[in-house]
Length: 130
Image (cartoon, rainbow, N blue to C red; front, side, top):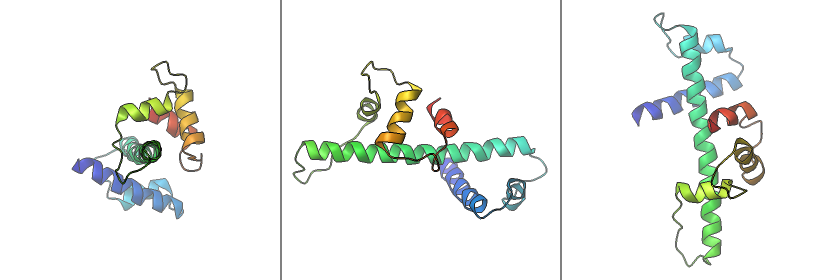
């Protein structure tokens, strides 16, 4: 859990630095990458941290959408809805064959959750799906 939190923090910092125009090779030096790690290892770690951050954003939005619909179906009554992975899976499984395809996943993310390609690239979605 601590490693995940540190990865998310590093990804957020590096995303902000990249947005500010800092070249990627300078980011490695900026965040304390020593000579004992090669650039490919660091690049893979950075990409993984960014993927975790993207996954969290997608599943948070999906959970909130499913929760709001569940509350609306029950009329609210002041109770919060419990959302589990099965409920989220059913939301994405458009053809109800109990298998989630990459196309269904992308449709859900782009159309249902309104997450633009600027926020998560198509390649990022493919990596997240696999």
